[in-house]
Image 1: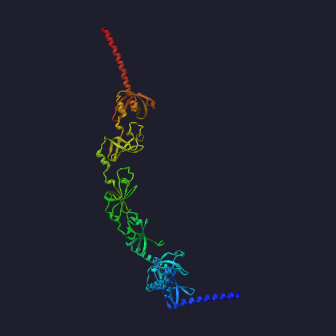
Image 2 (image 1 turned 135 degrees about the vertical axis):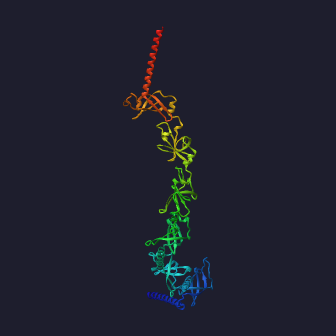
Image 3 (image 1 turned 180 degrees about the vertical axis):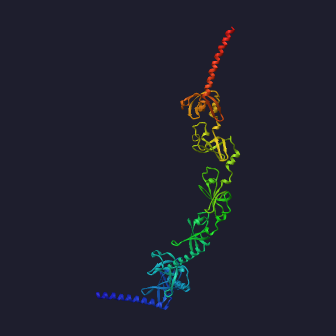
Amino acid sequence: MANEANEVVQTEAANEIEEMDFAAMLEESFKKESGRDALIDGVIVEIKDDVALVDVGKKLEGRLNVSELLDAKGNLAYKVGDAIKVVISGFRNERPNVSHKKAIRKERVKDFIAEYKEDDERVIDIKITGKNKGGFIAEGENDVEFFLPRSQAAVKDTNSLMGKTLKVKIIKIDEENESIIVSRKKFLDDERKKRKEVVQDLIDADQAVEGTIKKITTYGMFVDVGGIDGLVHYSEISYKGPVNPSTIYKEGEVVPVKAIKYDKEKRHLSLSIKAAMPDPWEEIKDQLEVGDAISVTISNIEPYGAFVDLGNDIEGFLHISEISWDKNIKHPRDYIEEGQEVDVEVIEIDANDRRLRVSLKNVLPKPFEEFKKSYKVGDVVKGTVTTITNFGAFVKIGSIEGLLHNEDASWSRNDKCKELLKVGDEIEVKIIKIDNENEKISLSKKELEDSPIQQYSKKHANGDIVTGTIRDIKEFGIFVELEDNVDALIRKEDLGQVNEEDLKVGDTIEAAITFIDEKKNRIRLSVRRLSKLKEREVLKEINKEEKMTLGDIIKDQLK
């Protein structure tokens, strides 16, 4: 039994070897007959389910997957009896397997090779579709098949290439095996060489050239110059300074550029649009001077001011303090808007540092001059409190602010503006001074009321004897507080026989009023005059008594 089994195994093995040899011989015969042309003209003899049978000659029918006969919509593109080109891809049970798609690719490769010229340096786009031990199988335009050797892939991780699209160059045409060999390495080497030559030419020429915008980003634009991409940084677009390129340009637009720098290590080419254009600062440095009035357009507004466009790629700065004579500007947008055309005055220009500052308020009527046309010293006006400080309050009258000092707010020495007023209060004040030189206005609120001395004078007169409390002692005299918080001064020479060293603050002192000055708001007292008044009173009494006595004597004598 064992011998019979062995004989069966040996017979099957022999048959398998014979079948393999036959298939190989058959395939070889096809190759010999067709020479270098591996394409076979076949005829479809049967289409059933997912297999079609194709007559390939030698009384053989090859098996073809029906999927290769479908069009783009999934419908059969052929029928029984149609002639079709195929290639034998292998054998199974003495029947060849054929492929129509491979035949088409081979035909396209043949056509490509036939048209190829040795000096063809074209760049080809290929897509990696498969790989073998030697490298990668790829497809190009019109489904032409290419071979990319592993050594020519120019990438460390070859697994990452599957499905990728690459740019390559042809390095060899194998007509015998109908193979087109390409190289990504050659493409990259040639590009680097070309880039180096183009960049060097750009740097050496130092001239403006035309470039095409390929991509716009927030930090600049990538521009193609002679097949080389360079970056135009957003600060190199305009002499105005950094700008948003997407608001000015579109991808595909042609722009003038100039090479300004090349980083060999990073292979980074820096381009400039503004360097390719005339420098507007050179044009205006001899034409514009401080004090000139010019028309500008508000291009951008910030909380601290606004940028203005002169219309020739130069931008000036309008600080918030130069927008209006109003000192309480909260935001420039309350006075100006973007796109607005305004007249301004040049207040600073520096062509070397590319700095231009302008003023809007300088071309507007000066509030102080307008104020003087409408108001004068002595006028009583209404105003609004805008600011309160430790020394007083600022009151807005029309378009200008005047100062109400603490000492002019009230007749009381202890009252301060911050205690009497608050921002936003509308108050009535009197203009007491207009300082033309410093353009300042002084106001008074207390002058609208009778002063304590004016009220005091209604009840007292010169010569009245009064009593007060010593409030302060100075070298020149003492200050005395009378009734109703009225201050009076006794000069040192008016103390008379009183020893000033015996006096102290808080003591009560008696004196006579020497004069009351309502305009200057002063009262003068004198102890010396008080003494004289008292002496007169005594003399008057004495005289009176003496008179009466003499009369009585005469009267008695007449009797």
